[in-house]
Image (cartoon, rainbow, N blue to C red; front, side):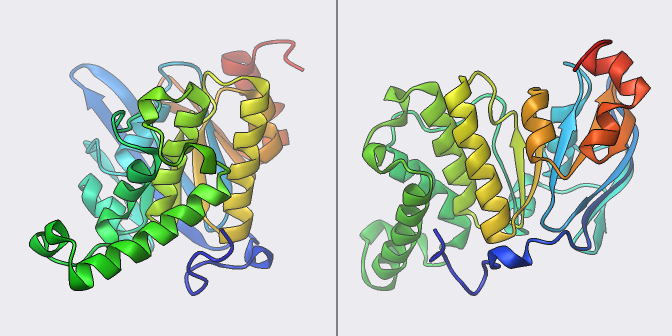
Length: 273
């Protein structure tokens, strides 16, 4: 995948953590009388891997949904690439370089792996719909280029053998990999991963960790992920934000968060090694 659009893809040696890419400032989100997020603030810096952890119901997925516009907070703002907003539609977030995967796989089960990944290129297609439908002229050339790009993603994720297989026939771990490929097809600046390793066996988790690290290191993609496996979090994250019942408990490097008494008590559990 090193050949993917070199003009937009940083080299591996530019992976150093950079300036603030996204700032979450005093975000509060309510559902009726339930406070899902309560005055949450944190930053995501360029090229880092940020893990958001916490027990079930802590507000982790709600936070990702606020960032990419699925939920609109009642209080607070989000600043992304220097622009502050209180609300945004998901298509606007996608157009500005925010892509995501979901806790529950959201693929087109009757479509092939390649066609699912191609849907991640829709915002990059500029030819009129009628010309795309005719598959003629500039629209044909444009689609061929997008398919070449998606084939490179397929090679990168090592799923060449399932490129023509309907994703509904694939095992869970491969479906997760296809969903990651669809998100990558959008060439995101910020990639949001909602429990990318949930339900996977040890080998599948190792593969997914490797791909996440390669995406971050080779392309400079900033990643914010939700994950329950503390071994994974401590191994691949540059920084960790801990949520509990909609409140922020801790924010810092993995080792310091791991030893924070409030985190140990609320999430990791007394005696967690």
